[in-house]
Amino acid sequence: SSHSPTGGIAPALLTRAAHNGCMHVPYETEKFYYGFPVYILAYPDEAVGVGITTGSSSYSLGQMVMIGCDSTTHAARSIKDGGVCSIKRSGVCSLNLFGPEAMGLFEYAGTISGGDKRGDAHVASSSYDGVPVLDDSQMSLVCRVLEATEDGTYTHFRCEITQRLVTPSLIDEQGRFRYEDLHTVEYVGDARRRIYRYFSDRVERFGTFMRSFKQSLLP
Image 1: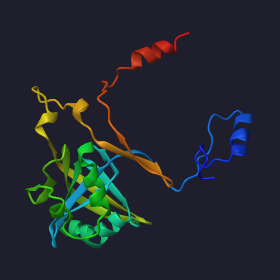
Image 2: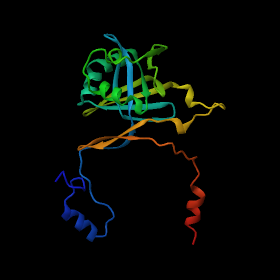
Image 3: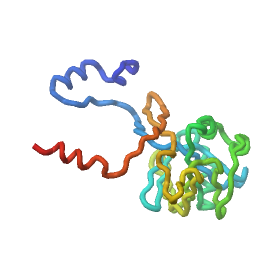
Image 4: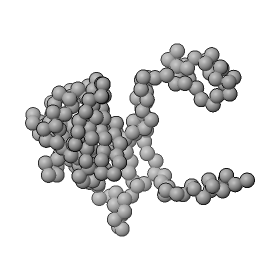
């Protein structure tokens, strides 16, 4: 039953798995999101000037960012019918990260169909060499779209990051990034539920845990 506390796993299956000594049990779902930052994608739009939509599927390596969307969702159809065409023509967009203060904007930009969503929501933007960037974001990635590909019901954008823009409060006096002050919102969920998770202020340097872990392995 989808109402069981095990996420739809049959009790008999749990018993059988435990009997066989397995530490894991199957979790059957059509999709699963294990934590991705929610963002607002902004792009030039011939009809309204600047188009926006909400997304959560992205990853970055070096100077590249991949942006993906489900082509069957309302937001993806909006991009595909208007925004994606605009992005392909202009070859640019920006990925804008906000904190919990933008929860209403996230849901508005991701669910409202058509029209001037940015203007109607009173979201200020600026142009960086022709790329629209949302002024109140914590951080924005200015992107040049290198490739847009279709993969079944999904659309993938491969982009070059041409500039990273951050709010001044995220840079300390020595010019270092204040990671403890970056408060993006993560999207997690599956076919049953869609959930937001929020960052804490805890940060640790890379390598902090290696010595104690290696010591724990000693006989």
